[in-house]
Image (cartoon, rainbow over all chains, first blue to last red; front, side, top):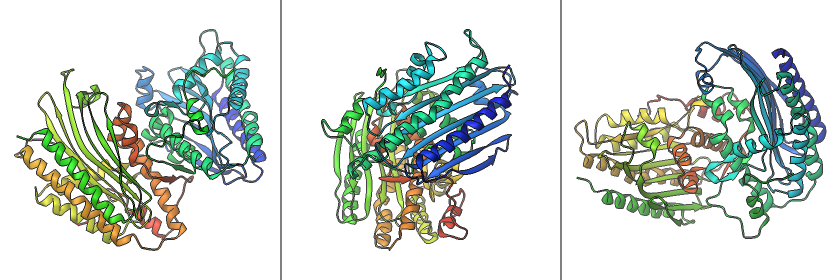
Length: 299
Length: 299
């Protein structure tokens, strides 16, 4: 039987180790810590980093919150007890690098339980390169597949497809990046125990730093021009569009009076928009767009 | 009896005259024209301007579209005939200036009719100064009040309140700017004819250029520092947040497969985000925030 405080403590420790390792990989900036209380119960620690050697703006949030379950949550779960309490804890990360050759990364691991007895894990990792390199995409997906394969042979296929569908900018008909894995409602069912689900979530959470610091170290010193920086700003604009228009977590948080600054730490330091920008034929920008679609098999 | 083609033609003429007058006031850039067809019926002309003397990025959209009414529209109107056709035409404007002392402006006038017999006008003008000047806010609201008062003594009070409620960034607990007027579902009812509603919409549309060029001319040459430009970028970030998270028209357009580039022409050329930015005590930025609330009586 899992104890929520143990899950919370593991997540809190994960936040600490990720921040320490990202600081090391960055080599210059350090995370500041902004602890906050939630009026309805619980709170969090938003750790943010700015203007490092590699990281331009990033955040690693931890929270553990509880109280009366919001009506929309219960409704979406077809739960009719109007007075259910909830407990939610998790870690959420978004990193925006300076160098356009280093990708944007996002990771989230979370646990949710209700006083009605249900509990589940959710989360995922996805990568948004400003320029898609096939080699990097293969590396990234292979790492995720390795993590998944340790726990179940269908995890990678299922959760990769879920990520393709989730990280999709419908109004642009393009994916946010090259996807990754996304999973939710991982319960004690279909032969899994909650302990096994937690083990999987631990593997995912623990894999984050080595995956992302690989890209940081490999690409941080690659030269780039103004053209590539401008393209990065436009791609960040799409990141903003996804997060504010389609991301379920963001929308839910903003609509239910969540902690705005922690939710919107995912937004980039700078994003640009240009009317109807269309890359030149056969340019590397056009090639990148050709990879922003669902269903590409990278491994 | 109003004829929809006459309304459409008046809106199209308004687009032309506004573009011509904005070009004149800008003194450098000219609008390009991007005509488009809507697969389901109708189309539009998106006119966009970039890198002028005064205007950094702006758009003046005209459209006249028709076809089968989208389910969500009918639902929101409590209409049960599933096969109603709609016709919609309007002009929509957003201007982002270079100079942070010149405000962002938005205007929209629109007409909607259904084959079930209903028809109505909607629209509004609102101003988003990067720095709120009480004098400018009074001028702006006085102009709107003058327009409203020509048509009905309660229009200004009612539509000013509607704008306060509509242009509200709930997750920030602040208004987008200093408001203005917003109105919708102006039908032939409560003693008004559709012709009278149209006359009011004409007054609003025709007032746009003189109001906005007043601010352009007055403030375009005011000196500003990097601090003020950086603040402008942050305020534009809030503009993005409002448009993508809360603006009904934007959300509806993106969710119902509207023309993305025309819908998102409202986004700024550049917007910045900074974690938990809080202006210094007694700074002009803090003073501006103190004006971003509902219910301020400017006239």
